[in-house]
Image (cartoon, one colour):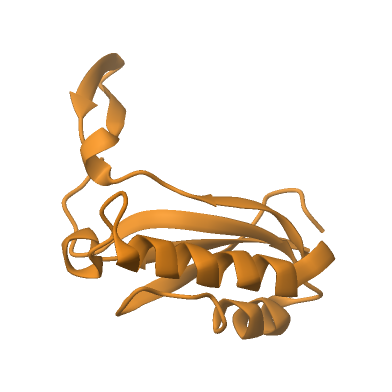
Length: 115
């Protein structure tokens, strides 16, 4: 079964500005983690900061475009992995190994039509 592992952290606290040592360190940890996953990793990527986000919102049939993320939250979506796992228990075990730059959460979501 395929699962998305969605990585949430506080952007302001993580200190992951472009060119920073903190960003280089976490990228290195993710590269090692991706290698460790091997064939279980189907895809994934880090995301640029929420300041680069654009949201298209539909309300009452009308669409509007807004700068920034959809909602204000304490943690922001910073990246994701798409993995293949036998079941939710294996996906949880893999999610527990995802590198974080500080405090954060990994949301596990099964993919539609995948298994």
